Structure formats: structure tokens, C-alpha cells
Amino acid sequence: MSDTEKKDHYHKVRMERKKAQIDASIARADGEKGLLLVITGNGKGKSTSGFGMVARALGHGMKVGVCQFIKSRTDTGEEAFFNAQPNCEWHVLGDGFTWDTQDRAGDIETSEKGWKVAQKMLSDDSYDMVVLDELTYLLSYDYLDKDQVLNDLMARPEMQHVVVTGRSAIAELRELADTVSEIKDEKHAYKSGIKAQKGVDL
Ligand code: ATP
Ligand code: MG
Image 1: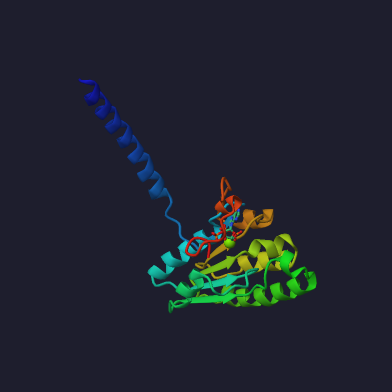
Image 2: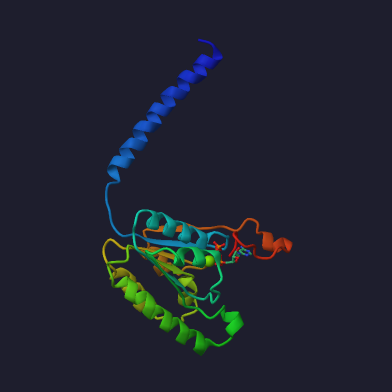
């Protein structure tokens, strides 16, 4: 056998073994349920990931609800796009970051009002997916009753998927989640003086 033939042979043997392992693990993972996903960490891509799942779900004809806590701007590309989709309901429920408002009592009131909108979706099985964008801050700042939020998440319809985004997800939320991704910041254009860019950041 030439060197190339040997390499081809070993590659084939390795790939056959890998395929058998992957097929077996796919066959084992045959459960179905509504998932709770948490996308956290200090890198860029948390909300983007949530909106990516919204696109996937809508593509399957599923009904999706999005609650944006914290953020108050309603001129983002994602809102313009997804709000125009008949199966997507989009709520901007924030009034800015806490360092902008500097008003803890006001932030709590806004958060509680926002949570009522989320609660409606979490108790309605016509929503196949609910995205709670930047919810993590409302828990880490104690703007919402943690137990209430966790209970509402647990009591949701069995097949409903929920995606929670935001930095510093609290331990209890990570524990409850089925999938947790921590997005790590390695570099961000903002730190080189580039402002938020349309189509990339908003
Ligand atoms: P995106 O909405 O782009 O997915 P994100 O949800 O991961 O970002 P947020 O904390 O919600 O992050 O921040 C939203 C805005 O802040 C975006 O304009 C984003 O580009 C920017 N941003 C996110 N991560 C960083 C970072 N590590 N440094 C500076 N700016 C960031
Ligand atoms: Mg975000």
C-alpha cells in the first residue's frame, strides 16, 4: 500500500467507527419536550442566537412570542423583520438599562409589568416558543421575584420552548435549563471605537 492508500484506508476505518457511534447516540436521543435554553456570558451573540431560533421556529410554521426586557428601542432590524411575520408577536417591555434610568423602584415596576406579558405567553400553549430577551438582569438585580419566575417557567406548557438571554444568568436558572451556552468575549469591535452597526448589532 502506498502512503496515500494507507491514509485513505485508516480514514475510512476511523469514519466508519465514528458513524457507528454517532448513529447510536442519535438513536438513543429520541425524547421530545419543550426546552428551556439559557444563552448567557459576556460575549456578543446571545440575543442573536435567540432570534436565530425564532427564525427556525417560524420557518416551521410555529407561533413565537418575544419579550424584550431592558431594551426600549423599537427601531431594530430584528423587530422590523419579525414583527412583520404573522406568527410572531414582539413586545418591547424595557425602558433602558438600569444605569440609564437610575431608578430602582421604576425599574421594578417596569419589570413586573413586563413579566405579566411573559406570564400570559407562558400559560398559553398556542405559543410554541417564547423568547425572554435580557431576562437575566431582572433576576440578578432582584427586580422580579426569583421563585415566581422559576415557577412560571416550570409550569409552562409541556411542549413550549423558552429561550432566555442575557449576561450573568443566576445559578437556579442554569440548573433548571436543559441547554446552557456561555458566550465568551474574546474581542469586540466596540472596544476599538466602532459604534453599533446596523445589521450586525441592531
Ligand atoms: P447581540 O444582540 O449582538 O447578540 P448580545 O445579546 O450577546 O448581543 P447584549 O448584552 O444584549 O449582548 O448587548 C447588546 C449590544 O451590545 C449589541 O450591540 C452588542 O454588539 C453589544 N455587545 C455585546 N457583547 C459585547 C461586548 N463583549 N463588548 C462590547 N459590546 C458588546
Ligand atoms: Mg442581548
